[in-house]
Length: 106
Image 1 (tube, one colour):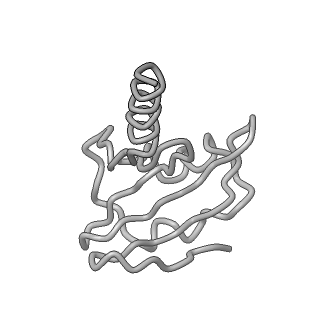
Image 2 (image 1 turned 30 degrees about the vertical axis):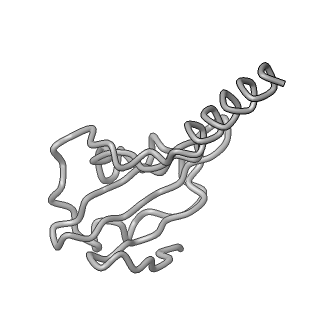
């Protein structure tokens, strides 16, 4: 019974650690982007094409599913999701400074 309790506690600790969400991780000092910078960006583009057009992201957000983040000059940010082996853009969402998400797709 003692072994069961120890095993149960270890399992509970591991589940708690796995459910921890990773916050925003800043990867560059870019941050002077405007919403208009994203007008050329369309779903289906590769990560390389997107960064060729607007540059490297400001950081990342998430755990497991990781979003590329571009900080906007008004305190909001754009988060872009690239999936698959070729890292194809599948979703683009603007998050305003109040945390409201607005789909921004073409």
